[in-house]
Image 1 (cartoon, rainbow, N blue to C red):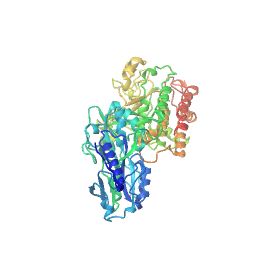
Image 2 (cartoon, helix red, strand yellow):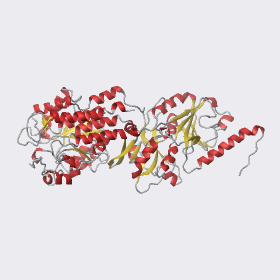
Image 3 (cartoon, rainbow, N blue to C red):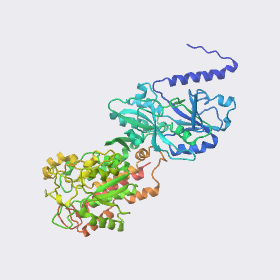
Image 4 (cartoon, rainbow, N blue to C red):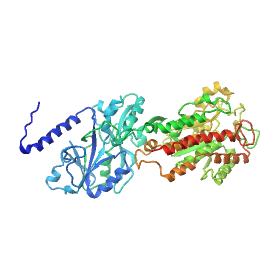
Length: 618
């Protein structure tokens, strides 16, 4: 027991001592339950620029408080706090260089070395604050288990610049067991002032981090079997901002030596809305990559998936459905920069042209939305159909179905490396660029089991090659089992579909989507790009976080499929002599189902689900 005696002027010192002991007790707690802060001290002429930099990059730099010029005490978090002495270690920077670390900044005022009234202090949220919540949720905190400071890495992701400040994002990494990713995302999402939900889950190289064993700040944290690397935005980004802007003099806390407040970190800063809680989904195994989307967006996309799983033609496709294939396909497309689409199948080998109406409308619907979202889109077609498909694309632009023409290319197999060179720059697997599929016997069959290999190019070689190229994912869309990519459900096709053992596509895609899938993909992409949780994850928490501007939202809405546009495009196909797949009729039908009421009804219902969410987004 420590007995303290006070007299006269010693009261102030006693207050300081008691608060110091409280601070030390909290710092020594294995998992802290008080709000912690990064501290940055800058000359006042840079203060407005730095505040703007924080506002532009809210995930790494959640601004808790900005002091007045020359303020040396803080009453926002503590009843008494002297920032020159209360943090255990400070970094001192001169002209953008770290010159030393000190335990106190007192000498920088007492010896008159700087004009202290000219300095402004910024307090930024810290991820240490959510470690207690992770533990409570049953998520292991490996850095605490190992008694180490958290690993911090400089990424290749540039922050949004403001004024003189511009630097790369810094991220902390905490290994999380794969089965607990959803729990970690939900818990940390509750407090944006402690950096909020993760900004990246999976392969570190996708952030530009080449060696996990060599963190730029903090200490190496060991992975355990079954762990996945999870990255949160980090306040040490502010230190990178100091290094890049090169102020004559600046200070920061030393990474890991945080300012500890009296404010409990036990409740969310805002009342959580369960519909907006992000969920985590595996998008790719090679490289390992997960993405996030809100419960609301996921629920809507699952509704879309149910609609396109319907089987008015009684073809048995419902039995082939796999939940969340549409969602995972669209998450992959959302993160992509370029997309190649192939469609068209010469099922009517006795007619010229031999193509069917099933496929091109959905392909154009996808391309239209992808272009509106800023993706680079290319159409891949058979050599025999280049002239016809170019004319169809030109007509789609003329009628307003497409806003701009899509590049049309062919693929020819000149040897074992042809697909690799087509998909990658100079055939380098580390630099990726970007219909009916082959059966087990190497042939291509229509639904009646007729071999039409002589009419198709080996475009499915691109799907085969893509399996071994990191960064390329594939999606197949089909309703019969012979479509390219449906090798993923080959055994179901063989046992459940007519002629399944003969026609089943042998080439699997990473994901496959059922009938009317092109329309559903376009709608699901719209939902993801109006989902705040997904948009934050896409942007790594950088940039102003809000719903897209009204003009951008209107542009995306205008590029959704519609009954009028799809009817117009189908009539174009009919004028070019393209026939219904099932019946061979030269009419406004697809696979024997007339556009009105069957296809028009499906499109209307997809749009109702999609647009019902827009007015409800926060």
